[in-house]
Image (spheres, rainbow, N blue to C red):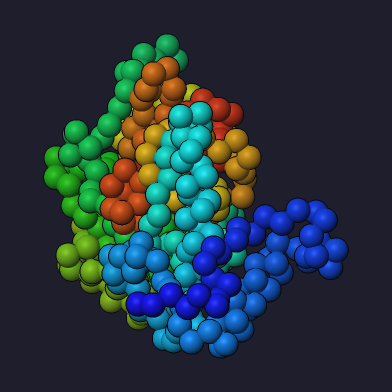
Length: 362
């Protein structure tokens, strides 16, 4: 492809303008600046007949099977992608200081606003009197000696990493991740359960299909329904459809669930060590989390109450004196450590790791 030399696209600038810039004088906020720049570039592209898309973009687009409806849509996505790549590169230059690395992934063509709007998938639970009997508070035993590290994958209690796709269904994967683990430890057999069953059938309990939900509401459904189907009998579609639950295909049941005391990381450590995988909900709205690749993720400014993503906590450990939680996400194997992440442990309930931690009793 030939580069159109008259274009202004050779170097796409970042969105960090000085306070004395024209944008600041006009009083434009960050979002308005971003929109204005994108539209300026799109308008300029009408004059310029050709535009050079970087080789990395073409490779990334192919790897992630991205198809756009028009030249202007691809141009807009490319500009966003370049800005995100710049952000990633800047962080990786100080990886030796912050202790983790970032990497471009399938979410790279989404703006901050789009990502936060489409992937804030967890509702903070509102406990309902009708179901209070199904919730108990977990209390660790006194004088309990815990192992230095735990990884339930080595005990066959963790199912494969899933990808929720464009369906906001982490709440279903979070609820089932812990139920699969507890069921496997009790029965000796790991059975993968149906997230689609939860998405399709639990709206009456407070969930919203592919538009957010709660791990606890999913528990309510499973308890009241006397079970949840297997993944094999009720495969994942990534879209809400009519409920097709069949009792003959039930893969696991539960009687009630236990909640770790809010914010108590010591109790959370005991729970995951002694009980098995735990469902947790964290603030995953930051770009650092979105593009996480490896290392121990440390986000001091994330929220412990405004949680957005359900995860399955499968263990803990330490590396060079830095303590971490080991979690499984539902953003596919191209995110993080093949779908897993190490989150900071013992840092005042960072990102809400212990704010809504629960697990079922079968």
